[in-house]
Image (cartoon, rainbow, N blue to C red):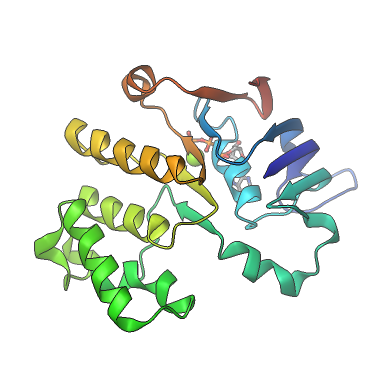
Length: 225
Ligand SMILES: Nc1ncnc2c1ncn2[C@@H]1O[C@H](COP(=O)(O)OP(=O)(O)OP(=O)(O)O)[C@@H](O)[C@H]1O
Ligand SMILES: [Mg+2]
């Protein structure tokens, strides 16, 4: 499902004396289908960078990355968007589309996948009710609180039942009850077969939901399952 073999990542210029430092170094691990992993480590350790590799926003500068059965270094660029659509992402900074309502933001992955409009209506409405946003379907992101925006971002990431779900600090703006609800949602998705990786600093959440961990420290994996 996910395999890193000696993967390195540096941002910006490559090679030469001015080369940027590697933010990820010699990362090797493999996750089977249906795995659930916490991604832990101090601020700046490389958690978001590792997730960026897994949603193809960055390509490894060294090593080999295999995602959903595809060796990324050998996959033609034109094939990446299709692969990308099987991956759900909750971004640390949400990245909702500002001119679309909460409903339309969440509907987007289903509409891109060509699902019938009746199913889009039903699924999006049900999920937004479930995350406590029944009254906010037609609201624009600007007019939502931080926690409400985060719940829309979570709903958008899971609505199409991705094969791989990557969540970057998804409880950063949620209260404890909402965080528990998020965990129910992720566990349910995981039970249905989605591989889930959650980057977080929320130690009480990690303590309450024990799962294997990937732990980064200064760009290196210090603990692998
Ligand atoms: N676009 C970028 N260009 C250059 N360097 C970057 C870029 N993004 C991140 N970095 C650097 O990469 C390192 C890892 O950053 P990253 O965002 O992956 O950390 P993180 O573990 O997600 O931290 P946090 O817990 O604060 O979100 C940091 O030193 C950061 O300065
Ligand atoms: Mg981060």
